[in-house]
Length: 224
Image (cartoon, rainbow, N blue to C red; front, side, top):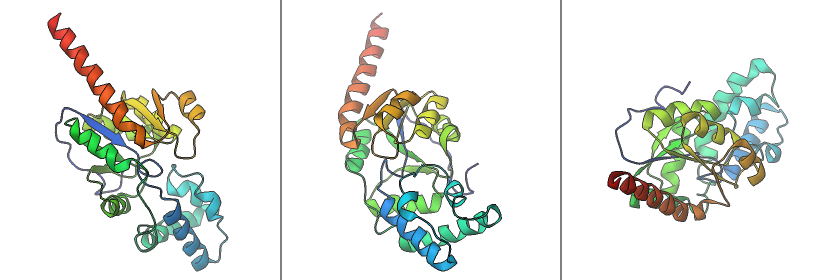
């Protein structure tokens, strides 16, 4: 379930496009690596931070379980989140095309929704830092993302992980995958992605064609 404060009431809207955060909208690898390095320094426990950032997507606890015994994971997750704001935000840039993707949704008359497994307050710090204005639902992973997508009426969900594809399919949304994270284009297609893009720079063109096709279908239906 999402953290308290991660969710907000959903207003109505004609077009809602959901986006994943890590490796979809932001390249969080430098920041997350810095946090793992600091946590390792504090605890004296070896963490291969370079390896950890190659498998972003699943919840934090799953990664911490590779380095800490189960009974220590909750405390380490709390400490990780405490360190996050000071060490992970500044080094983390927007992914190529991320801001243009937000603009494309606005030009189409829609709204953007970020649905991420990341702790909501830290996700908001990232969005503010890179200048992305979007609604936010945090602490949701894979199929659980469908909860927010359905609540907000999202018809499209964009992500980089096979878990994002599963979430989109569970919600009945069009799954648009970008091959910018840990999953290859082939893995994303095999998971059931409807569309696979190289990165978000291709998204505005896809969205324009997608909305035009739907507008044409509605016109034809009314004419019939």
